[in-house]
Length: 462
Image 1 (spheres, rainbow, N blue to C red):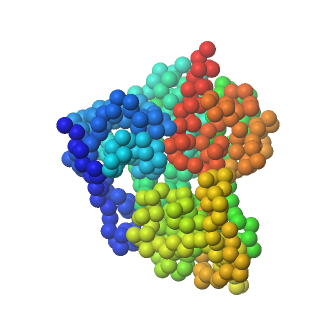
Image 2: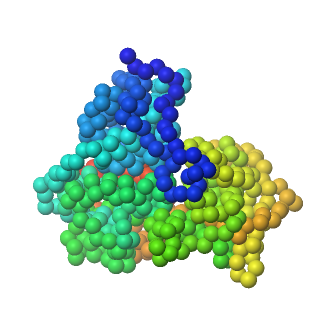
Image 3: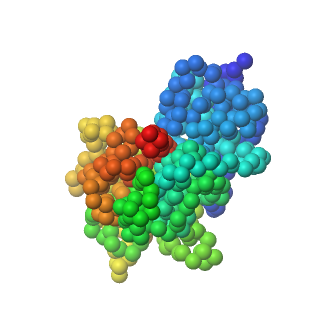
């Protein structure tokens, strides 16, 4: 009999007043008993709407059935047919708008906790089941993958499983992309990320780190000098956007990209044991309302800021961040200063001392469907802050497009592709993830990597 409880099995979390003083993971995960109980809520629908909501088409009812019966190794094997990074996806995917958003149980209560179950299966497998990954026999065809983030990792894994000789070129000193430099330790532990990345490299994927494609080597040279038969570009969106207001060049103004990279990848929270510092003041303002803004604000709190504000030009209902991230931020005493828009950052002797904001009101919906914010004339006020973090989005770095003739990009600098095959305007060059969409979600990037791998295989196997 299914478990007909209308509520998900609750997941334990660190106490908010305790966790703002450490970088340990906030949520604690399910026990085996809790996972089996939650899995019992799945109705095993024949139509499988949850699978349709998953960008990488994980066989969700099948793996949940195995969890309900305590067969965790088999549950993992089912997930791994489509997803090599389940511990990561179980933590950071927006399940509420994807698989869980389609769950039938959500019509009269809470949906099945698909993300929590995926996380449990992956964590349990890594902790309790030691199996060597089988390296497939080579088919003697070479593919280069540019970047080491979620799209590239997925494309590389899917091709390696089919016998392709895949080489990944990563600009930084560690693989993982946004998984390593963007998402904080308290949401996504880096040791866990490294273990899941190993499941990809163990398939035989070669990794070349500290190589900037477009500078160290060009895409043309990958074909002409290295002998690759196809190239996938998953180089991400590493160029931060700013507001172009006066004062953005003052000391104490960070892009969220730099701020989070210093803390996550370079471990600035452990300074001086780690050699990369990060300056944090008493009063921090984070501009933006997405998940990156929540990450920056919650990180600043853990680094010792006494007051941290999210400054966003719309209301709470329009916040693009996940509901869970907003909830956790509120629990951690982050102040939401909404319906305000910065117009100037004020400084003294080259350092931030304040930020001038104008109050906003919501008008008619814009092209995104959200009500358009409009300034209220004469409502400017000075906010007392000494650090400003700008988290309003990112675009792809122009280096690769500037060094690759014939690669078409749109007005935002994103690579133009055929959305069915992820082919670019260059023959045998494919692209996906943030390099195509601008900053988006991990799972959407992975979905693009899967599409590209399928298209590359279909072409090269002819």
